[in-house]
Image (tube, rainbow, N blue to C red; front, top):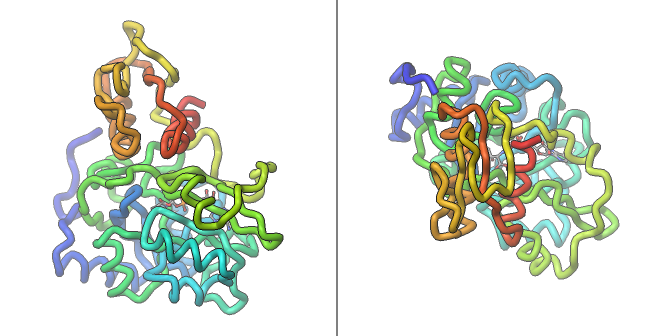
Length: 316
Ligand code: TXA
Ligand code: MG
């Protein structure tokens, strides 16, 4: 990671910096914002030019649909059609790390590039106090993918954003380390009453099933539903070997529990801590002198499923 950044680019979220962020966003510009999952690259979701700037800055080759962030469930209901299940999930998990894919309202003020032409939209009400303040102060719905160049490792610190996007983003609000550390769980609620997890995340299937009162439907091809979930995402730029309890000479080892490693996701084997540290460890490994990365086994229970999902993509 290069060390030279414009000191005015990364700012603590004091009143002045928040006002500057809101002014840029109102104007159709980009601001990198902290959320409890990962840092997001935000732009107003109702303007085509603003949304196009996200794709340009990330270098995304194609238009994947973006998640839109809202201040609360009432705001969300002006954009998507809610049924009782959606209201129950919002009540249980918002604000928080849950994204719901719902039918887009015909009268929603959303630029077509946000949904990539789909009749549905992905909505999330985030919990991070800085992001909530920006949503409140701006009154805007904000499209925000992870604030990194396309295909790279997601940022969980302001410095990660600066290292990846450089001067493509004028302002990065520094809200500290992301606590959840892994992108939100994406759930699709189907018209036929079934539901599915399109992307595993901090809120696991069991927690969703407990609120919805049913198990998820059997997996079908998710190619059309979650077009952005490509295997090559999250790549640290070096070969990654999974389920390794020791490292070869030319490998940087990311440990977990009893496997110590050069760094550890969680020495005590705590999965929530491991999720919170996953991307920071991958950034660390990417910058290390070793040309390869090995990663200790991580159990697949609870949020471990989301960690292993991201590791599999990093290794693909
Ligand atoms: O934690 C997060 O969710 C982060 C932070 C910044 O909030 N945001 C994030 O956003 O990961 P984004 O835009 O990168 O997520 C996009 C993913 C797509 O790859 C796709 O899988 C799914 O959301 N998605 C978006 N709209 C969809 C839709 N209408 N139907 C199905 N999947 C959709
Ligand atoms: Mg991403």
